[in-house]
Image (cartoon, rainbow, N blue to C red; front, side, top):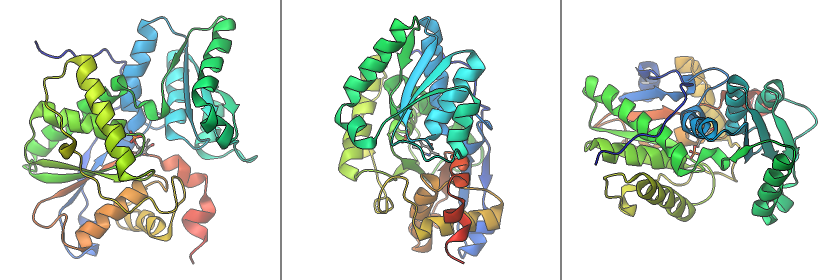
Length: 334
Ligand SMILES: *Cc1c(COP(=O)(O)O)cnc(C)c1O
């Protein structure tokens, strides 16, 4: 029985471009480097979360929900994308934000407000200590108000959300085949796991044998990602009856790029933002793509990536966070 793709709402500008980074490659002493521009899925609706939210939003609408509730930091790309999706579809977004945002409203937080999202803010410790209880009581409160909420977890990393990258993997593999790049290394950041899980499942479904997918953790450790991405893959296979065999050995991580922690930029990541901006006129973000890009750059410089076969970096978006920390991006290292 062929697997049926769940319904989705058309929100992302797809297919996103796949471009070659020749000026960067020259700067690095020669390599073949490509960029999959998933930062261009839209403007307000930019980045990887839109692909996942196409499915989550369709599910909300099909079930008569009028509200989407989710969680993240005040600079969360996922919260901003959810707020934009809700504005576009006439739904209410309710964002559970932790820790409490700073007084100055910037970047994604500013957009959340413009899109009319309702924010509920919590200290980090108390949120982590009782996450499930808080989510349940928010959903109860909204129901008591007469709303019909649908919950989606951090990053929309639930089995349904993984479909965004099952689809993206098909899109990317077609672009790679068209250009004769079917044997290549594909690098992407991983945090809540849905993007990588979807890509892994999508390439298994497409049987893209020459592609190796590498994830660079930008939060947590490899053991956590192995269990989380593995769980998402298995649950998605189970829920949708995907005709693939998934084994933990399919997951490959490039470790060592988290730095001090999630959302804490370091000098090499800022340098990576500047390097790509200066050579190609393309902007990475400090939380996800800059750190993952460092993992790719080190591989290219060491000759492990982009030499014998092309390397493809998936730019998952996040540009608005650059505007939340201007002093970190341009100020601190002159
Ligand atoms: C959320 C996000 C990621 C990580 O994707 P996950 O599916 O959470 O692993 C990567 N890049 C950007 C810009 C993001 O916003």
